[in-house]
Amino acid sequence: MQGNKMQSLTPINTLSTIGQLANTHAAANTFADFASRKATNTNSAHMDALNTFSAYLAMFGVTCSGDDLSVAAECWHGVTHGLITGFMGYMLKEGYAITTINNRLSAIKTYAKLAMSAGIVSADEYIKISAIRGYSVKEARRIDSTRENTRKGAKKESANVLTNEQLKQLRTQPATAQGHRDAVMIRLMSDLGLRVGEVVSLTIEAVNLTANTITFYREKVSKQQTHRLTNGLLAAMREYITALNATGITSGALIRATVKSGRLTEGAMSRQTINQRVQTLGAAIGIDTLSPHDLRHTWATLATERGTPITALRDAGGWSSLAMPSRYIAAGEIANVGVVDE
Image (tube, rainbow, N blue to C red; front, side, top):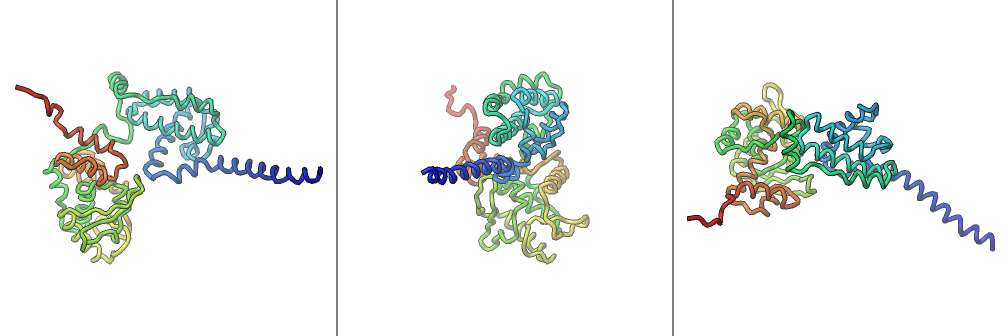
């Protein structure tokens, strides 16, 4: 009888041990698993937040780097709601834009939640951390009115929306291999509204010059889309593909790097080099700090002005909700339509 009782306890004890080991393993991999599920842009934004938080913690003698904070749960030991509130004050003093402060606060709270899941931050402390709120638009205006530097951060205060004449100038590039590439690159963002990351991931195989289409993956919404090329983009694409083929490039990355002579190479352009090239092309026609996002913003703005329905803009732009395209619709509307006057 007693022997039977001992036998029945053995599996339970074994399961308990396995369960504890599983919990330990899960805690150790909480941060890595989280990063593996997120888009490249999201992870990049989180690293910006963690690097800033690391600089703040260094003031107290804490030596965890941004990389450490992204993968090592133990780096979050001792993090409290008071410390994170102080972090917000630190960013204000350093002159970070309110939007940047709010975004980085959100990222830090996300990692604090991961640290709680890993058993490093207590549930009670996380409740207090989660209650910390960012600044509202009204608060931001009041705060900025008393600060000398209010724009430290990754984004510009507002996007450049190009005129039709500026777009025409930007799309007109020299009849060289580099010029054909630049024209295609500009039109992918200004004709189709592609994000810079989506442009980087494009392949030659994705272009169908017979059907006049291009197929690509939108990482932000985990969706593959096929877009019809505009007439201008189709013409530019034909010239560029011809230039690629003449160099012996027939497959792989679509947007290729060039050497100083303008010759296309086997290497693909990165986000950084595309950003730099767009800025250079913008400066050539008198537009300072032009960015790929400006081209996408211009595409959405002009599409709205032409009467594009909000659902069509959402789908074409690769947004998951109507919130972002609604901003373009609202900005393009005449506010007093419907008001009866004399």
